[in-house]
View 1 (cartoon, rainbow, N blue to C red):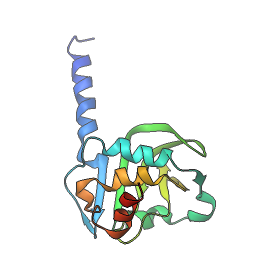
View 2 (view 1 turned 180 degrees about the vertical axis):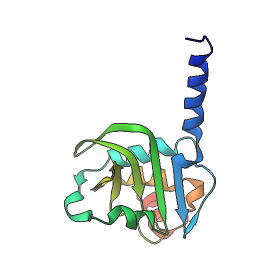
View 3 (view 1 turned 120 degrees about the vertical axis):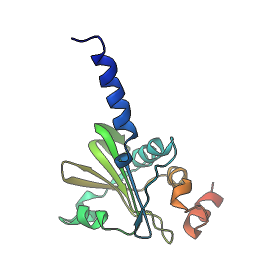
Amino acid sequence: MKPWLPLLLSLAGAVALAAPDRFQIVRDGVRLSVSPGPAFESDVLRLLESCDVESTEYAVKPDTLSELMGSRWLVRVNLVTPRSIKTRSGAIWASEILIVLRPDAVPGHIYTALAGDVRSFTKYRNDALLAVSTEPLLQLAGARPYKQLARSR
């Protein structure tokens, strides 16, 4: 093996981590072309991990993924590789986390996807949602439901 190949591969991995397609944020129907802050992915993971209830049985329909992707308000985190995530209702595998974050209501469910298989979770911790909603790109800090979350801390 060439001595420079491991360095090249590690640099390629670093570029993949920073790719703009890692995060998709749609605000009022407009896809933002900038990436969120460095803690955003871990905040989204923490929100998913805080969920007490898997709601897939009643919240996911065959067209849920296409409905989510067409949402006017969406946060989508593409994980670099599929990973095991421990929610409070059990461990799951996911390659994507999707959240509809509207300014007029907190999300009813947090969604995951892996190879087209969509699952949903609910009953998350308010402080975990607050951490996600304070990302400046989302512009939700001043929205009524999120102000109420901040006050209830």
